[in-house]
Picture (cartoon, rainbow, N blue to C red):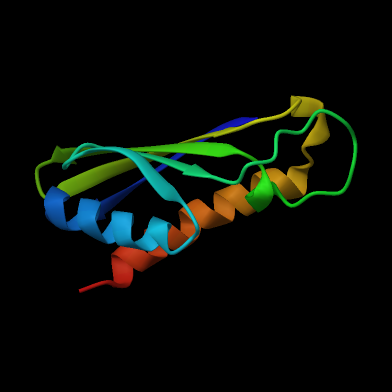
Length: 113
């Protein structure tokens, strides 16, 4: 399953990058690649889904690529998810879980000083 969500925050791209990195590492992601201040590639989970069974989307092998683009005093943040497994196995609640992760990151960045 692929999902892309973006948002905009005000501030320094370096600060937004560092805050984002610290936040997502707390969500059990491991940094695979880092290109300060424009790109974070992260990995989480280890299960690859091939058959129907109960699972949590947080346990599925997921690559999360976060890109940062500075435009004036704004930083545009894009989160691209790639969760392993047959697209038909994921439910709308799984998509909502990933969308909520992005919303929580956005809120965290808006409220961090």
